[in-house]
Image 1 (cartoon, rainbow, N blue to C red):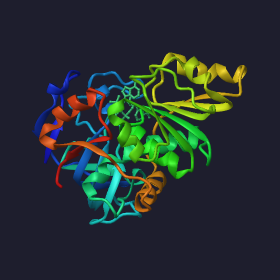
Image 2 (cartoon, rainbow, N blue to C red):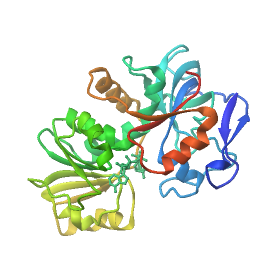
Image 3 (cartoon, protein in one colour):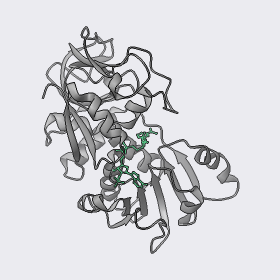
Length: 315
Ligand SMILES: NC(=O)c1ccc[n+]([C@@H]2O[C@H](COP(=O)([O-])OP(=O)(O)OC[C@H]3O[C@@H](n4cnc5c(N)ncnc54)[C@H](OP(=O)(O)O)[C@@H]3O)[C@@H](O)[C@H]2O)c1
């Protein structure tokens, strides 16, 4: 099968096309013929050996965790899927190998793809959508009528977070650059702060929940605009955030939490339900064919995407 692979730490130009054998599914895995994958920053952070959460990859490495496609074979202990099923899934970060014509994925990391979207587009959802859902729901304890500040609201995770927060009935203030203001308003944001024009985030009332994917603003600036029992959730484990997660409970009712996304089919089911009820949709900023994965990584590394970067494979 065709795959994109790199042999050593380095820039996007390390990624080259190769022919490799089709992987074999283990007892609890599905073998999937991919319609598409999508790029997440962790893909290129691992290639550059920069990820703080995950072990360095072993070489050669086929990047990619997000996938959507058709099941072609199931392992002996798989009970929930059969060949022909159309699924979306989050394969293992670092070893998921989703930049290929076929990939294997654990049954518990897959779910039926949303029926109201083209199958390829659903590959944009898993990692970023799960991150947004788990951050807001599990770490943030989001609830109706809360005031939520989303920093990085136009990106892969952020644009899902805006929609998910609205689906819970929250009031959303989105932080992004002016060129993405219309995009986030179109996804339901109530207020938009253009960080290129304004560097303080105070709203009319304090925020119950701050979800920060950028982690460039000092934590004290967020704590200053949060409710007394507010929660700050970050996707990046910076020293200041990890220290505050441990020490803040000693002196305050405010909490700092760090996300580590997990692949759960029940959460993918929740994302599918949101899509099928019209409350969630992936915004695709750019689409690249598999052969141009290096260009897709380079584009992601610029950090300016509005929504997701899709990689089409068999679509
Ligand atoms: N811990 C975990 O489990 C986990 C899971 C997923 C992602 N992450 C991490 O979370 C981060 C975000 O991921 P992603 O997929 O959303 O990345 P992404 O799609 O590359 O995010 C790009 C977005 O960031 C925005 N941006 C850049 N600078 C900004 C600023 N100062 N203020 C507000 N927005 C800004 C850009 O908007 P403008 O062009 O409008 O500025 C762009 O829309 C990455 O570092 C990723 O590695 C962690």
